[in-house]
Image (cartoon, rainbow, N blue to C red; front, side, top):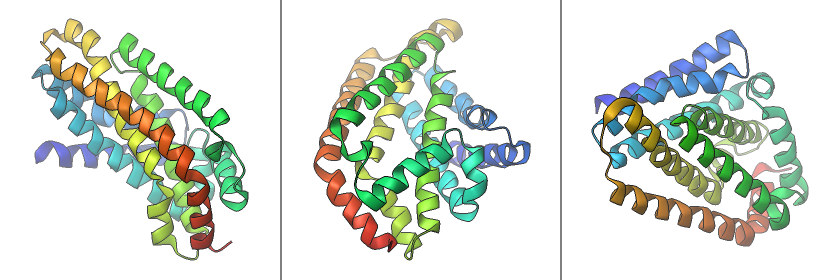
Length: 235
């Protein structure tokens, strides 16, 4: 129980420091510093599942923190989170009109495939040291959209829940697993530990299936989800 609590507290501290310093590019770096040692400690034990579990706790803490900060001070996080303002504007337009990349497979599939390819390459090439800040930046602007939408809603609690679209949650879990497993080869050589690659391959297959499910659910559900959000927000 000590490690999960420490991950949450360190993540919250990373946001406090990022808020105080006010440099957008530094926020995902601070977020990464809060969790990276815990992932490495689990990998040194050869336990990919434990490492993935710890990073899922980190992702949950980031999602909650980014959402709450953006609910409380959306104008501030518009600037603090990398791509925060642009993503919020894009998603608000989608909620209001139903038009946008979120419900256009020809737009979101190449974008998500590009993100997955870049993230995977960075994890493999850098032992996660560049992939994790990328993942943190993605989490932050997604959380910013949700928090800012809740702040503008007549039903903020329900909006904050529904704003984390189910396909996006599946994508986040998949990215976390991919990041952990693909970070292991370089880290195992640098630090000197053995990894259960049978488990690693199984986890990667599940993560790949998650990315496919993400696309399927987004294609099928995004139009209806937009209408649901519009009613809940009350615009």
